[in-house]
Image (tube, rainbow, N blue to C red; front, side, top):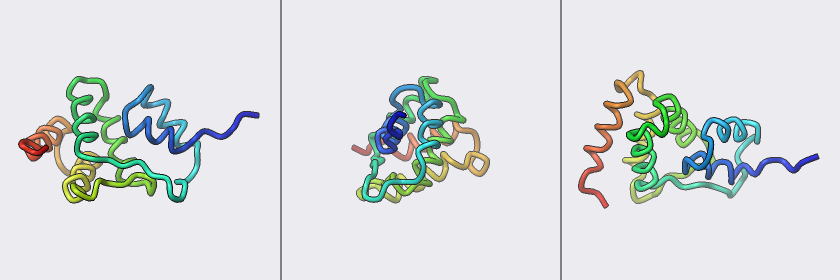
Amino acid sequence: MTAPPDRLRLLEHVIGLVGDLDANFAALAACGPAQPGAAVQVDRSLLRGVLDAFGKNAISAVQLERWAELAQGTDDVTLDPADEEYLAAALFELSSPQLFGSMDEIVADLRRRDDGRA
């Protein structure tokens, strides 16, 4: 019998877009609940990388929406306190395109709002 998958490692791969995103989503779903005290942090640069991946067609709108839902909706993902308000709003918009327009429009708006930030 094999050891259970490491949820934190899988979460890091999903949040960081490492490997096969759909396979990692599926493996993560099979892992069970969040591990107390273990977390992956989303910061502005990580979000930029995800938006870039969408812009380069490396991930689809559906995958981006699913990514944002996970980042927003699990206890083992935290937001960088320095940008928590921006990141929370961005994840909400990305996870709710039916409220905010097409994913292309949402990503373009987030990029405009991020312009000039380090």
